[in-house]
Amino acid sequence: MVKTDIIRQLTDYFQREGIRQAVILTDENVNRHYAGYFTALQELCAMDKIVIPAGEKSKSIETAASIWNNFVDKQYDRNIFLLNFGGGMVCDLGGFVASTYKRGIRFANCPTTLLAMIDAAVGGKTGVNLHHLKNAVGTFYFPEIQLSADVSLLETLPQEELLSGFGELVKYALIGSVELFQELFQAKKLPVIKQEYVDFCVKFKQEVVEKDPKDQVFRHILNFGHTFGHAIESYASEIGKPVAHGVAVAQGLYYESLLSYKLGHLPQEEWFQIAEFLKKHFHIITLSTDILEKLTNFMLNDKKNRNGMINFTLLERIGHATPDFQISSFDTLGVCDMPSITHNP
Ligand code: GLY
Image (cartoon, rainbow, N blue to C red; front, side, top):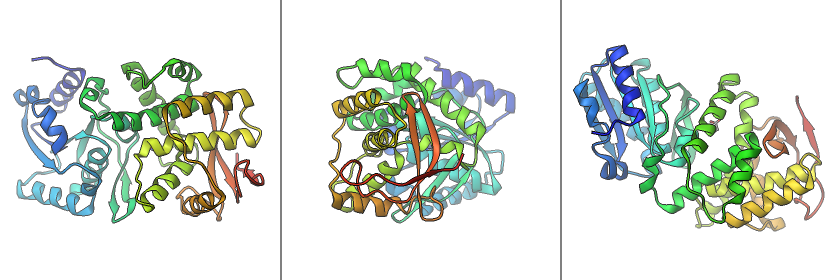
């Protein structure tokens, strides 16, 4: 049997910590493709599996309660180890269950989507949705062991989900690595996702989270593109044309790069390069005054905001971002007046 890095890491960890019972939490899609992924671990400890329906609907307090009940029925104590095997939904939900069952059990994330590999599986944010309110209930709770990502799991990922993850990958290049951006820029179409791209993003995020684990200010740089991105995601869903998270983020990267340029932070030639690159891979929504007004209303509800001002991370150059700019209003981005802005260093 082929032992992946993940199996090796878990084998070492289980032996070191004397783990005797683990539960795999996964969804139906992942289970269909990778039912035997952790079989080698059965030599070491008893493995149980909980399979939940795929999709955002499962990221609910009801699913969390059904998992707590399952654990209680099986009389699991605090020594049970939870292994979240799936995309962002499974990692966020499983992390939340781990942080709350018996006041906290040990867990790890084994992400299967690009989006989860470079975001949800790293950094200790857990949560469930309350009806339409995404991540309304959650905790900061860190996995016991940060497993390396296995990009071979992306082979079965649908193209649209890969594109969505690519939006988030481009964000990391823009805020953290001009070299990665230039490499991605060369690709004519969606590039093959290399292990080194994912490893860079994970390391970058870990370093940011180490400096600001509770998301006070510095960690907001990870939200570059997300202020507009979340608003576009909500707007698209409201008009019945939902877009994938990373695709909305890519559009947010476009508009927040434009904002960075218009406010005199990002040099013009870099803005042009970013715009050309994003337009090559993603459809960018056109902002009429009417749409911008709707997006602004969504942005005013962003949880990073303070005192009614919209909080932005801005790009200084490709590979370097600064968090915490407050913008009181923008009538447009170059369509009308410039926004007024303050910065809290
Ligand atoms: N997804 C952004 C963060 O984890 O802070």
